[in-house]
Length: 177
Image 1 (cartoon, rainbow, N blue to C red):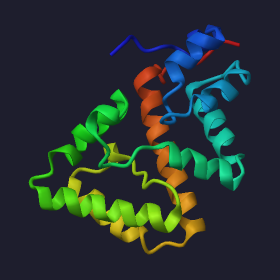
Image 2 (cartoon, rainbow, N blue to C red; image 1 turned 60 degrees about the vertical axis):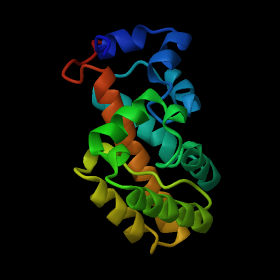
Image 3 (cartoon, helix red, strand yellow; image 1 turned 90 degrees about the horizontal axis):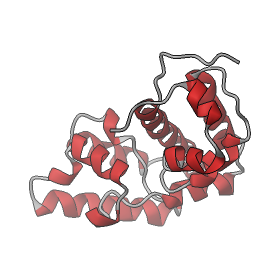
Image 4 (spheres, helix red, strand yellow; image 1 turned 90 degrees about the vertical axis):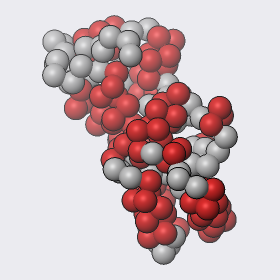
């Protein structure tokens, strides 16, 4: 992994470099990073995270659903996933389903989910110890209504985003404005 950036160095990044570094913290949505770039300077890592979260929270419902639709299904072809998603799913063991039956069950549940809600099931895989906990969550969340699930899905997106930002930023440093 590349050297972590300080908040001061983030504030000095040009637009293109900012997008290269942070364009996938919200999977497949470099627009989020593009919108936040103009809100620099950030006073701290927490301020940077808060700005990203606020941008997402301020989106209309359709915009939030669009973010959820941009995520690939957990059962998508491995090579179509981003490097970040591959690493996250490997750490959780989602890609090491013991047998075809478990994989088919997960695929069935995520298909039901997409048909019910119109967007992809998103979960912060890094916060789940086992593939079984992911299977349990998809079943549990299938019971939600669309508004509940839109909010739950967006909260999962923000968890993924924050962990990815922590991978890129030295969050112990603060900026000197």
